[in-house]
Image 1 (cartoon, helix red, strand yellow):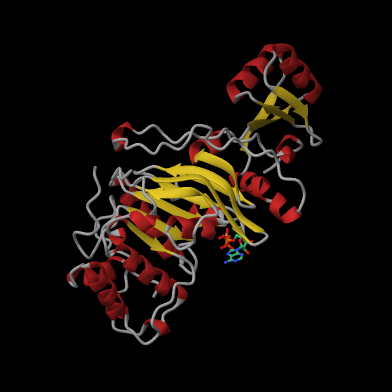
Image 2 (spheres, protein in one colour):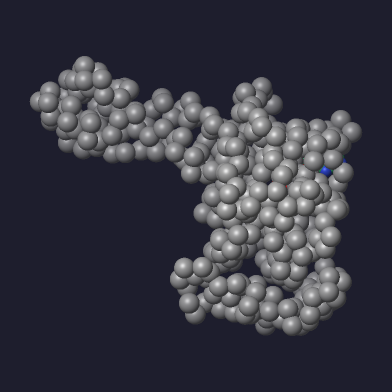
Length: 375
Ligand SMILES: Nc1ncnc2c1ncn2[C@@H]1O[C@H](COP(=O)(O)OP(=O)(O)OP(=O)(O)O)[C@@H](O)[C@H]1O
């Protein structure tokens, strides 16, 4: 059913290439108003999933829909979804401006929009150069400009940070967040959590074609068990005091410090004071999100058994139209516990419509003219 919300729903999606199970029973939803990271190591099945979503590969089973419909049944797909996939070719001798004009004509968009998009992605000054001479980063920008021509409701980007310089990545982050704040939908794939961590609010983690985690990034962060490293005058006395007071999970470290999980500095300080144990310092420590991501996906490389799969949303991804403001968050999976190594020792106002003007300004960054440099 066509629901017009811009919602992406992937339901029990499977793709088998001969003997290669590229995608296995994948389910998740991407809600409008959010930027969702689609993460997994090389070969995890991300591109295949995105290609199925965009009607370029036929699923073996299951479904991927936008607005409740398969891509091939969208009335004017370029107006609904813009995409940037890997290895997209440009006519080498055609200028960026002419490339965009050809696309604009094909989808019925006026030429004026071509210049707006060139300005938006910072290619205005290179618009009349042949795309064949463009750097990887410039080609990424041209792909993005192409994807945005139809003023789509949904953006699907495969590894968009590839080839971008830090300035380009920062611009892309601000742009995607503003795009999502307008109630639009963004799905970005990457094999590096760190590359997209700052730009996403939801995350789907896949490995070996299967979902490992699906839910808010914040929830994944919160699942990271923190601990406090305490430097006491007398470690044995502090361990006894904390255990008797029932404060946290206490573990003496080799360097004379005491590691306390599941307790805050105030609880520890109070218990130490009550027992008359002097404390010289306390340090709060969080497990690294990247480390957790690596642990969730690394069995694909190790060739060993995969960890138990987190329950992919048990209830079917709703196919019925739901007004955006009433949509419940997608059913998140419970993230797994912290990596085993963590326990064992110390470890370190409404944005303006970007399509109104060529010089898109990020909220709070008045004066910045779109994607300026790095050509
Ligand atoms: N057309 C195809 N024919 C056969 N196997 C394929 C085909 N396309 C993808 N595969 C295989 O499916 C698996 C998933 O590939 P896919 O490109 O979807 O992964 P990915 O997560 O996008 O990886 P990367 O981050 O390297 O782009 C890989 O084992 C790949 O070799």
